[in-house]
Image (tube, rainbow over the protein chains, first blue to last red):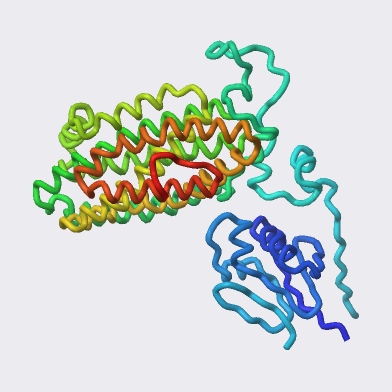
Length: 89
Length: 333
């Protein structure tokens, strides 16, 4: 049985950097551009890393900043200062 | 009755401008990309500029440095006008609140007279250096090609003007906004032997024609030694003598310098890695200007922190240049 985790963002300028970072860190992720929304799903695990984001953005970045643009998530969350991980335990 | 909700998705025909698409592919582009890449004109100039008839407008020959594509030099902070202004507004808000606090509590006028005098002699004259840096960066922004490069320099120019004004405000706090402290402090800049090597260096830099040489001299070499010396070492030295409060007023400069390191480092690294000829040219400039920047700061270090602090900073600059693939002579790192 497939176990998909997903996260959906509003399609705005902030979210594009997150999507770029996610694609780099999770080559297995599938990005779906929907009207005004970007949904990313992946088998088992999705990881958003602060260091990758900071490199993309060119500034310091707080993991919680991302939540402003998040519409929905699916999966168990493991969040700390350096990463935000979605996976099914 | 059942309602079925359906979404229709419309695929946009264009994700971004054609010139951005040619560079980055047909996908949504960031604001920074759209505002910065392939913006300035490169061809079809009708007339040569009256102010420089040897060259065309946006002529790549205004520097000895050659780049296949100057847009390879980008801003790691991704500042375009909106992002830059938003960021600086935040920094300024914090600085304003510190200045307001100092002003309301008379933190500076409560300092002993000799310390107030030291501030006017050692710190406030730096506003003249800042104005020089403002003019240099404006001129670079005028001569540089590639918007990614010129916009970094015009932001830098604005920052320097702002910091010059902050330094002036320190003097105005000391003299009760009469302006006498500003005149007094300018006297040090014009006549005190302590400042003459620096004044000479700033004036010499104003007539450097090659814009990349100028950005190297101003934003990497002079600033690379001056900022850590004045705003870290001299700041510490002032603190030991009871003027800790001044640190509140120079916090902007420390934050700013730390941030500016990112683009200056990225810029010299990219340009140096482009070709052997660029490397040789940069190295020649560094060999010429780095000792001059050091000598210009010598009297200031001697009058305050002592020479060790300046030598330590010189070693740090050497390490920084080394990371970009360049050497600085005159220091055994």
